[in-house]
Length: 285
Image 1 (cartoon, rainbow, N blue to C red):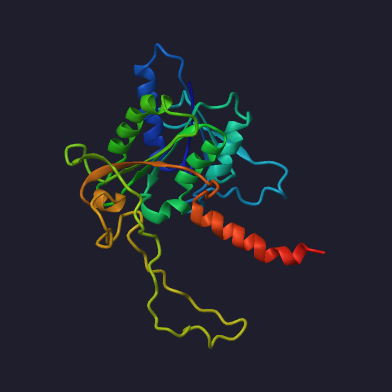
Image 2 (tube, one colour; image 1 turned 30 degrees about the horizontal axis):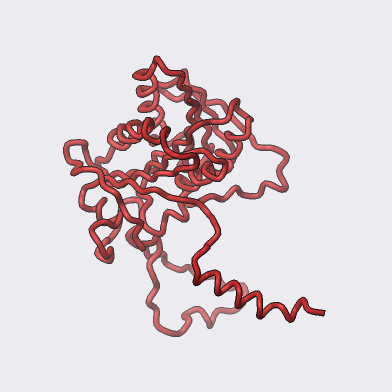
């Protein structure tokens, strides 16, 4: 089995090193099996990139650099001038050898819960692999003083065997609170909550910037919500099974995700039918 490891914090980030070391230990434990690990990650931070590939049409190639990860120098590691999703695509299309059987993304320095998962490069890399039919695991850690990547790395390695038995294209998201293994209360299914990265700005009903003239510049203060790296206020979470609330309560969460696909609900089908009918007169001659 060939495992591609990537992330969105960049190949220099401590999270990917911790993940690779844990996977290398898992590899040694399963020495009787033919397992191979390769690291193909961005050479810079691409947090918040989602599944973006960037401007690829005007480029004639992608710069790569070989790296040696301390403690795992025997594992091939490459930094690419590319987003996490593009790293996944390139790694799955033969540029670095055979197609991987599994993609492991992370460990992200910050939780990926609630609606913020749409914007996560960590999750975007795993979901991109699922479009190619490769299962993946995205791993994220709550940032708080004293937090280390050890627990998240251990849990991630413990999921590899199970994920290999799952159907092609399965994607799991593992979020871990920033605590020690002794402090961890357990691991539970986490429902994706509605919490987002940016909170609403309650400035009143009028646009406070309507008086600006062309060329004038101002700054809009970003008000961060619950789904931030350290995990913000989760009082708005409606149920104890919501991922953010569970993390705040000291539990690691595991959630299955799926990538883009057609909305085949009856309600949406009716919307499409009405829209097609209303557009018909534009094409009727």
